[in-house]
Image 1: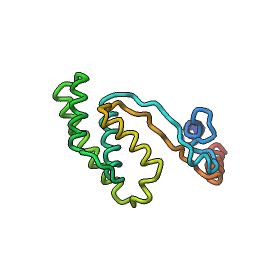
Image 2: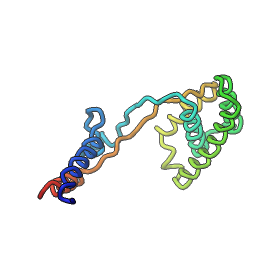
Image 3: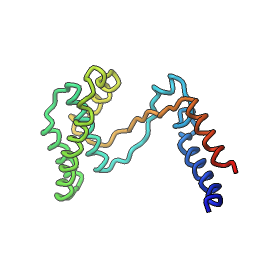
Image 4: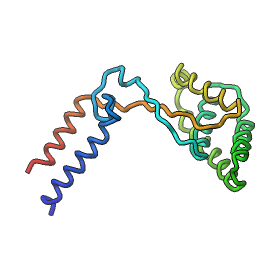
Length: 172
């Protein structure tokens, strides 16, 4: 039974690794060995503009703004966001769910970044991103923003180890 399942397992593993290594044709995939330029590159991706995304982004950006010393009124911003969702037609029970989601997410995000030193966390790019988001929020626009994702780079030696593992799985 194990011998019969081995080719299927090998194919599934190979497909999974191939999917991880492709990022729309770029050379900065999960399993590709990249240079220093690849490690710092960011790619912009679109995001759906739904209430769940908006509440998570607001919680994340306000937690980061607080960490980096931005001066803003967090309770007022939260109230403005909830009022904005109400203007878009959200039902009162949905607004209550968004408020709970914001509170829980904000607490989680603040705990997540608490241990990082401010000097390391609040780099120029992070501060620039926070400033852009906070300017949008203060203007009363809580629309979801494009998300930037850094590709994960694995060194070439790990690529070779993965290839060797795949070959060992297909050998009889």
